[in-house]
Image 1 (cartoon, rainbow over the protein chains, first blue to last red):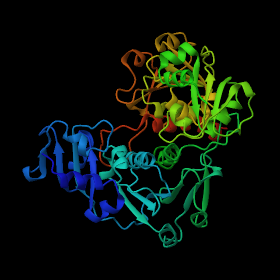
Image 2 (image 1 turned 90 degrees about the vertical axis):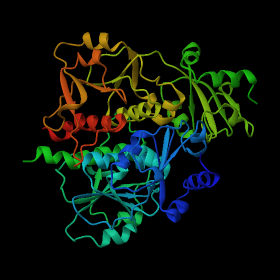
Image 3 (image 1 turned 90 degrees about the horizontal axis):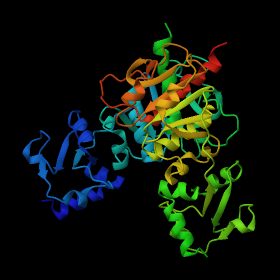
Image 4 (image 1 turned 60 degrees about the horizontal axis):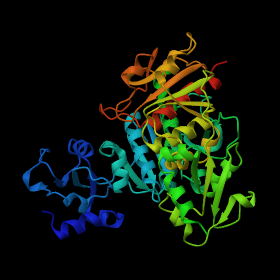
Length: 247
Length: 247
């Protein structure tokens, strides 16, 4: 049986402030919870209708019928919900291809981008402070467990980019950038993707050393840009395909 | 003032059966409506709080405050809603790169894929009969107006694929397919993307002549596949980049 205090705690974790105060975040669904249990993340408490997970008894609370509804953030609750401890945010370095997000606001987009980092072996995701919090329940859900495998940090982008090694190129994506398909891309680089509506902010744009764009192939010049998650998919694919095509 | 009958009609268009019976679909939001008004689609009726669109008076109904809420399918209604006539579904041919969807069920995914077709100049999208209807309000919303520019048909994939020119390759995407980056891709081809959970169906798989896969770069072998919309972004980018890199 879930206590009123537990319900209150879990519900409060929809807010970033409360997540930081308690150092806890919510994960839902068997598949996601299993992936997080198999990672370095620390379980705080598991709430489930079935005892299908192998966790220590003091961290498991069996839910009665209908109780999941009271704590779930999903329209269709998925039989289990867990609280995990938020790990200490890593200090980002400049190794390999680093993906930088400048003001991405949509939780679904951030979740999809974290999943893409996992697929393409991008170890580090560096976010501006106004990017949506990666421990937002909707983001965690959309990552399908990938959140456990990617180092995600929130920093002042100006400081992070300014302190980089001098020879490290900073690629930014723009509607009018240079054709991304034209030249092979390096395996040590920073790649910046911007906000859904406004793109990369002027302050960050000043630190971009190479402007990239995905050429539009459609006949009609539509003003609409690509969604930031699909644009990220195309850019990461371009950075990583080199591994297979360059000898 | 919107009549009860109009509200009933609009609400009924959430169902595919009713959309087909009336040959009407719903579009919401200024930007999407403007794009559709500038296309070959025929407006049936525009409901708006402001008279900002240039349409004939008999096709415009000014909404009073609070009325939009009664007819909108959105959580946050966007000041205008329009009904457009569903065009006659085109009979698909085999020109250029044709994208085929086999059982894509999520409206957001289909919407994003239609937007990608628009970007990459894919003129034809051919869907299996169990793919989500492209005139579903959520799909229309997610296309951001691109739905007006892509020919979308729903057919028996077995028949469509079997009747193709003998020399036309049929690419299918699979978890264990051949590295998509390894060889340049042709500009006349069929590309099949499968269902979110189950991929391409066995019946359609039998008609695939070339199996493609996007290699996974992450260190940990995660079982999770890419989302179908991001996988489509990567595949279409690979088919179209050839235009810029092959001389």
